[in-house]
Amino acid sequence: MAVEKTLILLKPDCVQRRLMGEVISRFEQKGLNLIALKMLKVTPALAKEHYAEHVQKPFYPALEKFITASPIVAIVVEGLEAIRVIREMLGATSGLKAAPGTIRGDYSSSRQMNLVHASDGPEAAAREVALYFKPDELHSYSPTLTPWFKADDE
Image (cartoon, rainbow, N blue to C red):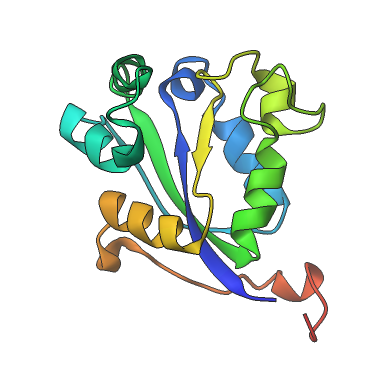
């Protein structure tokens, strides 16, 4: 199993609804390491870079308006199979279709206002992490609790 880094964005609705701590605690309770974290305001230029594949689509103006409306929290998470694990923890894109027990299933009832963005693969994760963080802002570490989260051969 590979240790992966991935980007998570706590979107404006997550910030405004004051669910940041709740969402972050779920990642920590899963045994994932938060290795970078910051609050920022997404500019229209950053939104266009982040969502480059969607800029020409009809829904993009509403997406840009939403993601730039309020501060977000950008987080880099590291862990075993972190990309897959986090996406499963989030649930389906639409909160109405997300299973109970997932973050979106428990707290969202919208497709757009679905609280959290997570990279969908290793290439996207590398590109997205670089959009929000400089290399010297990433701080990998091994918690002293690591032996209690997984066996030595994992």
